[in-house]
Length: 174
Image (cartoon, rainbow, N blue to C red; front, side):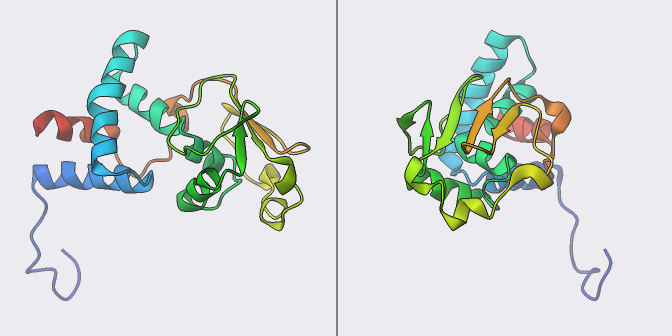
């Protein structure tokens, strides 16, 4: 490996590569180990069987349908932690009702809207999604600060730094 101490470093084993992929995805979405393993092993597997899609596509859909990730992909929040904080503080309403759970899986047709009292907040006026590429499954209405999930996310838009098949393989192996 390159660098001063590159000779003393060992390359990752196959298990190490799988573990690294899992950790990257888990930390990208800021999920605990228990929450992430349940999502991969139970929820995504069940979704893939009922929807006739592959396990990795089901996992990607579930990860991208979370409320905090939808705020992040719509460029309302700059980081996943900021999006989670916006949700837990109750700034957003889901389908017109108070909502503060960032890990909730949105369904097509669900609308996240900013509370009326916060629409003039400098936090939300500074972030405009017009300059950024928003995924095609999210419709942003900047006039009334609302987001709609128009359809299920597809894996053509993937921006993950890791391979979801390796994550599934890691959990199948353990």
